[in-house]
Every structure is written in structure tokens, then in C-alpha cells.
Length: 280
Image (cartoon, rainbow, N blue to C red; front, side, top):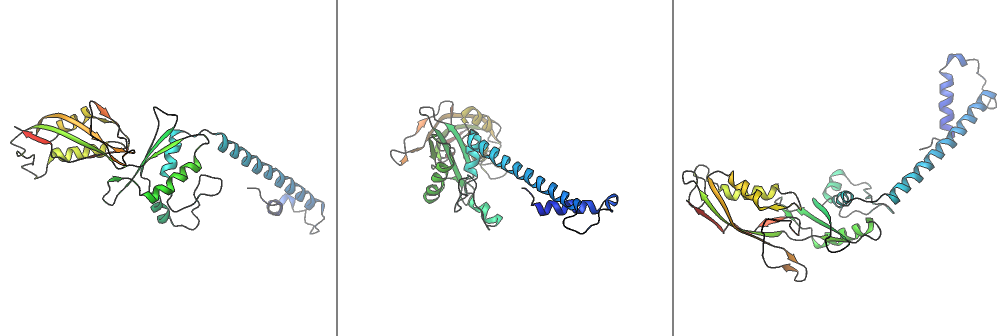
């Protein structure tokens, strides 16, 4: 930011006073030739600094207006959304005013986001999720979504169509046959030593390890079970999933997963562990 003429003049005067070689310039008259020269230099410097400021503003504006927004940019802007805050006029930055750091952090309700290009239409698909009180992934509320969608519409590039996916999790159904070690597990899959259920724990761990909007690969799931305590052979009989059907405003029917699957909502939730059979 450009300094004022008076500020620059005072800096020059202080510099002159600190140099003993200029002690002869001691006139207190405002019209002393050396004082006039200092003022001329101060004025010229102020003009130059003002031009630098104007140039910076113009270049910044050009970059902001012309820079194409990447997929990564859209994801970061989704995560940066602040519920209950307004944007600074004509920007994509929130006006935090006098809000505390804790209030700002609490307003950032989007904990997970992924952006992809639709395969059948010319549009971007933005998947989002938050966390419930138990730390599990969940959709934001309808009221929060009513604020988030206009925010995305406000900051997106002109002509870019965006669909926001804020769904309940895809439900994953697993039909497993576990050949187990009877020295380690009971017939119901309970660890004789710890009293826990290693297979169920391994499945829950696997789901947490999947990145948001990450691809569920069935072979990787089997690999995880193969390394589980007491498991000799994990056999996946069937895997299927279902997701929210917008036409029904509810879950559709289960569809088989043959090799891999990306969740429509961005994340999976295992329906239950009722279809795990333990075989000696």
C-alpha cells in the first residue's frame, strides 16, 4: 500500500538527520532548498508507489477473472463453506467480521467433498458429507443444503452446471462365508482371547480406510479379511449396494457389485453383519 507524502518525507528527513555528513543542512525554514528537494522526492515516490498499487490491483483482477477454476478448486471451496456467514461482495471469500476462530471453525460443516465430471452430461458432480455426533459420515441437513447450493451457484464459473450430491450413504450388503480357525474363533466369529469379533472389526476398518468417493474394490476387501485374526479363507458369496433414487426420494433396489463400485453418495455403510456364515 502506498505511503503518504508526509510519511515518506518524514522517513527521508530522519535518514538525513542520521547522516553526520549532512549536518550542514540545518536550516529550519520550510522553503530551504534541501527541504524542498526532499519534498519533491517524497512526492515522486508516493506517485510511484500509487502506480504500483494500481498495477497490482489490475493484475490481481485479471488473474481472478480469467484463471480457470480446477476440480481441486471446487473441492476446496466446498470444504471452505461457512454456514451462517455471508460472502464479501463480489468475491468468493467469507466475511468473518468479529467472529472468533472457534465460531469460524464450527461454521465449516462440510467435512468431505469430491468433484467429478458427469459421464452422460456436460456438468460437474459435487459430492459432500459432514460428520454426525458419533463421527460417522452423514449428509448435511436440508436447511444447511439450502444455504450451500446458492453459495456454489454464486462462486462457480459462468456456464458451468453443477449438481450437488448430499445423500444418505450407499448401503452395502455383504454375503460372506468365513472358514475360520476354531482354536482362535468361536462358531459365531468371537475371538476366544479378546471377546471381540475380528471379522466385523476388519470390515469396519476397511470402510473407514476408503477415501471419500473412493472405489470399493472387492479383492482389496478380501485381502483385508485374509489378514484377520482367526480367518483361514474368506469367501465373498455376494456383494450388493443400493443408493438414494431421486425419483423415489428413497433407496432403490440392491444391485450386485461384480468387481468394484464407486458410491453414488460418496461413501458406504454396511447394512449389517447378518449374512456372515462361519465354517470350520
